[in-house]
Image (cartoon, rainbow, N blue to C red):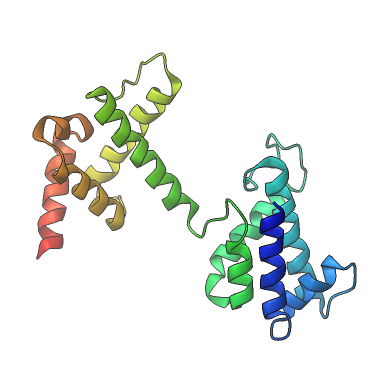
Length: 200
Protein backbone atom coordinates (compact mmCIF):
# COMPACT_ATOMS: atom_id res chain seq x y z
CA UNK A 1 0.00 0.00 0.00
CA UNK A 2 2.91 2.34 0.76
CA UNK A 3 4.25 1.85 -2.78
CA UNK A 4 0.81 2.67 -4.20
CA UNK A 5 0.58 5.81 -2.06
CA UNK A 6 4.04 6.84 -3.24
CA UNK A 7 2.94 6.35 -6.85
CA UNK A 8 -0.16 8.50 -6.27
CA UNK A 9 1.97 11.20 -4.64
CA UNK A 10 4.23 11.26 -7.71
CA UNK A 11 1.19 11.45 -10.00
CA UNK A 12 -0.26 14.33 -7.98
CA UNK A 13 3.09 16.17 -7.97
CA UNK A 14 3.45 15.74 -11.74
CA UNK A 15 0.06 17.31 -12.52
CA UNK A 16 -0.31 19.72 -9.58
CA UNK A 17 0.66 22.88 -11.47
CA UNK A 18 -1.58 22.31 -14.48
CA UNK A 19 -4.60 20.41 -13.15
CA UNK A 20 -6.96 21.77 -10.47
CA UNK A 21 -8.02 18.22 -9.54
CA UNK A 22 -4.41 17.26 -8.80
CA UNK A 23 -3.96 20.47 -6.82
CA UNK A 24 -7.14 19.73 -4.86
CA UNK A 25 -5.87 16.26 -3.94
CA UNK A 26 -2.50 17.71 -2.95
CA UNK A 27 -4.20 20.21 -0.63
CA UNK A 28 -6.61 17.59 0.76
CA UNK A 29 -3.62 15.40 1.64
CA UNK A 30 -2.30 18.25 3.73
CA UNK A 31 -5.63 19.21 5.29
CA UNK A 32 -5.81 22.49 3.36
CA UNK A 33 -8.81 23.75 1.41
CA UNK A 34 -8.80 23.25 -2.34
CA UNK A 35 -8.91 25.85 -5.08
CA UNK A 36 -12.56 25.21 -5.97
CA UNK A 37 -15.56 23.23 -4.71
CA UNK A 38 -15.77 20.97 -7.79
CA UNK A 39 -12.11 19.95 -7.60
CA UNK A 40 -12.34 19.61 -3.83
CA UNK A 41 -15.37 17.31 -4.10
CA UNK A 42 -13.67 15.22 -6.78
CA UNK A 43 -10.52 14.83 -4.66
CA UNK A 44 -12.62 13.86 -1.63
CA UNK A 45 -14.51 11.22 -3.60
CA UNK A 46 -11.46 9.64 -5.20
CA UNK A 47 -9.81 9.42 -1.78
CA UNK A 48 -12.98 7.84 -0.31
CA UNK A 49 -12.99 5.22 -3.09
CA UNK A 50 -9.31 4.53 -2.38
CA UNK A 51 -10.08 4.11 1.31
CA UNK A 52 -13.08 1.89 0.56
CA UNK A 53 -10.96 -0.39 -1.63
CA UNK A 54 -8.14 -0.61 0.89
CA UNK A 55 -10.66 -1.48 3.64
CA UNK A 56 -12.88 -3.99 1.79
CA UNK A 57 -10.54 -5.14 -1.05
CA UNK A 58 -13.22 -4.48 -3.67
CA UNK A 59 -14.90 -1.59 -5.45
CA UNK A 60 -18.15 -0.13 -4.07
CA UNK A 61 -21.37 -1.84 -5.18
CA UNK A 62 -24.71 -0.32 -6.12
CA UNK A 63 -26.61 -1.76 -3.20
CA UNK A 64 -26.24 0.27 -0.03
CA UNK A 65 -27.08 -2.94 1.83
CA UNK A 66 -23.74 -4.46 0.79
CA UNK A 67 -21.62 -6.52 3.14
CA UNK A 68 -19.39 -3.52 3.88
CA UNK A 69 -21.93 -1.91 6.22
CA UNK A 70 -20.85 1.44 4.74
CA UNK A 71 -23.98 3.54 4.21
CA UNK A 72 -22.11 5.63 1.63
CA UNK A 73 -21.23 2.65 -0.53
CA UNK A 74 -24.07 3.27 -3.01
CA UNK A 75 -23.04 6.92 -3.32
CA UNK A 76 -19.43 5.91 -4.00
CA UNK A 77 -20.62 3.38 -6.60
CA UNK A 78 -22.73 6.07 -8.31
CA UNK A 79 -19.77 8.46 -8.34
CA UNK A 80 -17.47 5.82 -9.90
CA UNK A 81 -20.14 5.04 -12.51
CA UNK A 82 -20.38 8.75 -13.41
CA UNK A 83 -16.61 8.92 -13.86
CA UNK A 84 -16.77 6.01 -16.31
CA UNK A 85 -19.61 7.62 -18.27
CA UNK A 86 -17.73 10.94 -18.40
CA UNK A 87 -14.38 9.36 -19.31
CA UNK A 88 -13.95 11.56 -22.40
CA UNK A 89 -14.37 14.73 -20.29
CA UNK A 90 -11.88 13.80 -17.58
CA UNK A 91 -8.48 15.43 -17.44
CA UNK A 92 -5.41 13.29 -17.95
CA UNK A 93 -4.73 13.45 -14.21
CA UNK A 94 -8.27 12.32 -13.35
CA UNK A 95 -8.01 9.42 -15.81
CA UNK A 96 -4.65 8.28 -14.43
CA UNK A 97 -5.73 8.82 -10.83
CA UNK A 98 -8.81 6.62 -11.25
CA UNK A 99 -6.68 4.06 -13.07
CA UNK A 100 -4.36 3.96 -10.04
CA UNK A 101 -7.12 2.59 -7.79
CA UNK A 102 -6.68 -1.20 -7.52
CA UNK A 103 -9.85 -2.89 -8.71
CA UNK A 104 -10.98 0.08 -10.80
CA UNK A 105 -12.01 -0.76 -14.36
CA UNK A 106 -13.30 1.40 -17.17
CA UNK A 107 -15.51 -1.48 -18.35
CA UNK A 108 -16.26 -3.82 -15.42
CA UNK A 109 -19.00 -5.72 -17.25
CA UNK A 110 -16.63 -6.65 -20.06
CA UNK A 111 -13.98 -7.63 -17.52
CA UNK A 112 -16.51 -9.80 -15.67
CA UNK A 113 -17.69 -11.43 -18.91
CA UNK A 114 -14.09 -12.21 -19.90
CA UNK A 115 -13.41 -13.70 -16.46
CA UNK A 116 -16.44 -16.04 -16.58
CA UNK A 117 -15.65 -16.90 -20.21
CA UNK A 118 -12.15 -17.93 -19.12
CA UNK A 119 -13.50 -19.95 -16.15
CA UNK A 120 -15.84 -21.75 -18.55
CA UNK A 121 -12.97 -22.64 -20.87
CA UNK A 122 -10.92 -23.95 -17.93
CA UNK A 123 -13.86 -26.05 -16.74
CA UNK A 124 -14.44 -27.58 -20.18
CA UNK A 125 -10.77 -28.41 -20.68
CA UNK A 126 -10.39 -29.79 -17.15
CA UNK A 127 -13.54 -31.92 -16.98
CA UNK A 128 -14.17 -32.48 -20.73
CA UNK A 129 -17.87 -31.93 -20.25
CA UNK A 130 -20.40 -29.13 -19.92
CA UNK A 131 -21.12 -27.76 -16.43
CA UNK A 132 -24.33 -29.22 -14.99
CA UNK A 133 -27.22 -27.06 -13.87
CA UNK A 134 -28.10 -29.50 -11.08
CA UNK A 135 -24.57 -29.96 -9.79
CA UNK A 136 -23.95 -29.93 -6.03
CA UNK A 137 -21.15 -27.42 -6.70
CA UNK A 138 -22.57 -23.86 -6.77
CA UNK A 139 -19.73 -22.65 -9.02
CA UNK A 140 -20.52 -25.31 -11.59
CA UNK A 141 -24.23 -24.37 -11.47
CA UNK A 142 -23.29 -20.72 -12.08
CA UNK A 143 -21.19 -21.65 -15.09
CA UNK A 144 -24.03 -23.79 -16.46
CA UNK A 145 -26.43 -20.87 -16.10
CA UNK A 146 -23.93 -18.53 -17.73
CA UNK A 147 -23.51 -20.89 -20.70
CA UNK A 148 -27.29 -21.11 -21.10
CA UNK A 149 -27.54 -17.31 -21.02
CA UNK A 150 -24.77 -16.95 -23.62
CA UNK A 151 -26.44 -19.45 -25.94
CA UNK A 152 -29.69 -17.52 -25.67
CA UNK A 153 -27.96 -14.22 -26.42
CA UNK A 154 -26.22 -15.72 -29.45
CA UNK A 155 -29.41 -17.25 -30.88
CA UNK A 156 -31.36 -14.02 -30.35
CA UNK A 157 -28.52 -11.92 -31.84
CA UNK A 158 -28.21 -9.93 -28.61
CA UNK A 159 -24.56 -10.69 -27.90
CA UNK A 160 -22.04 -7.89 -28.46
CA UNK A 161 -19.82 -8.32 -31.51
CA UNK A 162 -16.56 -8.43 -29.52
CA UNK A 163 -18.00 -11.28 -27.46
CA UNK A 164 -19.22 -13.12 -30.55
CA UNK A 165 -15.70 -12.83 -31.98
CA UNK A 166 -14.19 -14.19 -28.75
CA UNK A 167 -16.61 -17.15 -28.75
CA UNK A 168 -15.92 -17.85 -32.44
CA UNK A 169 -12.14 -17.75 -32.01
CA UNK A 170 -12.33 -20.00 -28.97
CA UNK A 171 -14.70 -22.43 -30.68
CA UNK A 172 -12.57 -22.59 -33.84
CA UNK A 173 -9.46 -23.47 -31.83
CA UNK A 174 -11.06 -26.51 -30.15
CA UNK A 175 -11.25 -30.08 -31.41
CA UNK A 176 -14.74 -30.95 -32.69
CA UNK A 177 -16.08 -32.90 -29.64
CA UNK A 178 -15.33 -30.03 -27.27
CA UNK A 179 -17.29 -27.61 -29.47
CA UNK A 180 -20.53 -29.40 -28.76
CA UNK A 181 -20.13 -29.04 -25.00
CA UNK A 182 -20.18 -25.26 -25.05
CA UNK A 183 -22.65 -24.08 -27.66
CA UNK A 184 -26.09 -25.41 -28.48
CA UNK A 185 -26.62 -26.57 -32.08
CA UNK A 186 -28.74 -23.48 -32.73
CA UNK A 187 -26.07 -21.20 -31.25
CA UNK A 188 -23.41 -22.90 -33.43
CA UNK A 189 -25.48 -22.21 -36.56
CA UNK A 190 -26.03 -18.60 -35.47
CA UNK A 191 -22.33 -18.05 -34.72
CA UNK A 192 -21.43 -19.52 -38.13
CA UNK A 193 -23.98 -17.25 -39.81
CA UNK A 194 -22.68 -14.19 -37.96
CA UNK A 195 -19.15 -15.29 -38.78
CA UNK A 196 -19.87 -15.42 -42.51
CA UNK A 197 -21.18 -11.86 -42.28
CA UNK A 198 -18.08 -10.69 -40.41
CA UNK A 199 -15.70 -12.40 -42.86
CA UNK A 200 -17.08 -10.60 -45.90
